[in-house]
Amino acid sequence: MTGDRDARLTALEETVAHQARALDEMSDQMARQWRLIDSLKGKLERLTERFQAVEEQTLGVPPITRPPHY
Image (cartoon, rainbow, N blue to C red):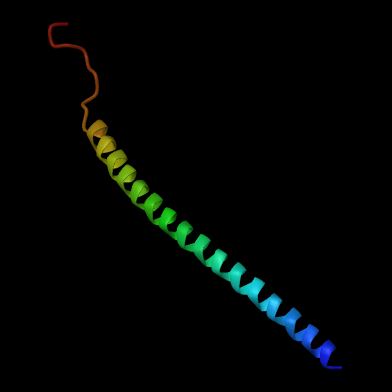
């Protein structure tokens, strides 16, 4: 009876250890993904600002008309 209980306890301890390791790995992966997301958000914001600046410059260009000497 004691051997069966010890085996079950050992199996539970192994399961908990594997789950703890898996949880740590997922936590590390999530932290890496958040860092990447923050980096990409910053790049997107800078690109959006640059695009808006270029767009504002092109909107201010007067239309091409015939030169006055024609």
